[in-house]
Image (cartoon, rainbow, N blue to C red; front, top):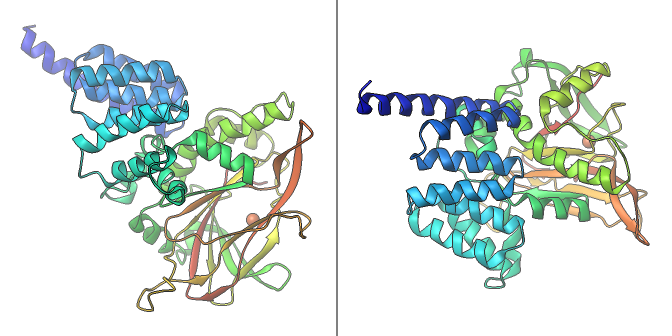
Length: 397
Ligand SMILES: [Fe+2]
């Protein structure tokens, strides 16, 4: 075959392999994704996009040194390619190398000035290095890229998009406080799409109407299998990150068991335990709605972290013309409630996610790590309607 035709053939094959690698990553199979992306790179070694993709996948596997080498290779081939700078910056943040991260993120913004997410993250890094007020940090560090695209197509990008978050900082905050916010995890159109599912009866296996002062007021519906693809992709993509955090806790607690690194393996464990019912739910609270503080104790086999995503906009108290719900803060505190229960009231808005401990959070007393029971709930909604997606990571019986 003449060299030109061979090159075309290699390019096509490499593109196909890269797609397969991302499909595997989306399925939670990062081991396979790594193997395939390495083959893609070997097939077309002069393609910076493939080196960048390899770096992202290696980063998801926490192989930071190799990931950094991949990003460096991408940049040696394409010095103005913004993506590898941004990903490398995330790695450096994870390693506590703030100045390097700042310099790299500055390059990313320089080469892709249209990317609002890069600029936000740069602001966050500037704040971390003391060059901006600190109050800008939490939201900006934990905000994901919200580019324009359809929800289903974008949900395929979750592993890549979630890799831009500073999971080291998120894990620290989740361990310290028992909950942590990821602002703007879902874009407005995905939120709208999910809210629109609420009245689609065939999608749900069970509906619970709460109307008791000791429990709450509102309606929640369990998705039946197969759950909507956008929810499935989101859960699969977030799981490897929270599994790492949960396993770190297992280590600190001196427990020998570890959660599998992939969602499919954990789901299989749930099934072996007889827990086959999907757990993701849609919740709807109208005016007067609330969810009393509680612990989620269902499931003999359970995952210690849960995710909730608010799907409705919050009204702006300073602008009467804005639409949205009022009240309805996410509540979190130690149990039993009291003077020392460290209550938190978090005003989440459209697309904001919260990761929280479902039963207990870690506490260190006199050098010994133990568990402190915690509760979560939702404060009274004083106006409007608040939809929420609830995503436990284990299945129910
Ligand atoms: Fe709950």
